[in-house]
Amino acid sequence: MLKQYVRYFTDKVIEALNIGSVEMVNLNQNLLAPDFILIGMLEQEASMTIKLLEMSYPENKNLNNQILEKLLLTVFVESFILRKPHNNCEQL
Image (cartoon, rainbow, N blue to C red):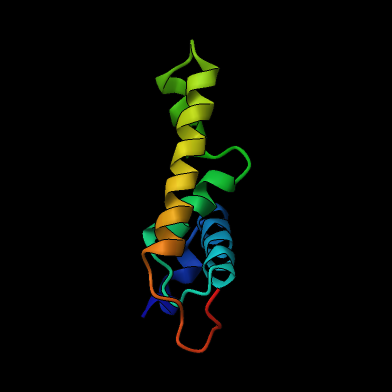
């Protein structure tokens, strides 16, 4: 069903999905969950997510970086530890 709508996606959406898909595969997962898409959004150049974060705390770039690091760490840990690996992939 999603395939028929891909042509309407912006390049940024496709890039976020691609980055998220790579992370999903790297962590031996078989579900492209929102946390992987979030990783894709955060890793994009000129990411709106990053811009919103920077606008939230314009006076404190250190806080922006801490929030971003914590967010990425949380997403990776949740993806890696709390999800079952794909059945056909080796256990780490």
